[in-house]
Image (cartoon, rainbow, N blue to C red; front, side, top):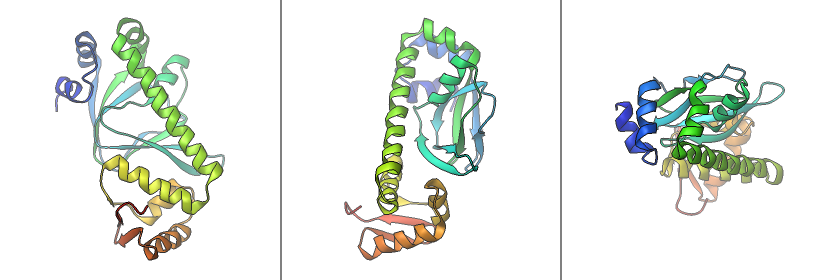
Length: 213
């Protein structure tokens, strides 16, 4: 899908002059499922407007362990890149394409110009901050106040809501990585949920049963 059509479809709030500038300066790039789109410590040169697919955002611990933070979906952008643009900082998160993904890459050196020229961009950035902040708070509460079985249920619900499907094509190993746990622990907890009728475990997929989760 061309940049202009993608902008009209997923970012209809952008004023015409802003869309023209993005079309002129942006680059539409494709990423395969599993491809690293942004590395921890990487110099930030672009912000990403997601137009297809889904992106997983991780943070890294002191011992290089990874913890899943949130998803980016079509119509959204990486709020961290806005911060890096303002402070000339390197990335503190890792972004991985959860499925085949397309994104419009916009050079960070024109972000200041966008903020002062276009109200629709200013409000978009502010709303992106708000959404990411809320998701970070939710993730923090999940870790601080809930047991692993509760965190697992919360994780599955987030995945379901993200793709709007009760069937999650995800392995126990992937879940363990996202929750900074072990595959053995996750498999045991999922089996307990299956016994309770909350999920149905299939090969490389998990089906959430009704409203029981």
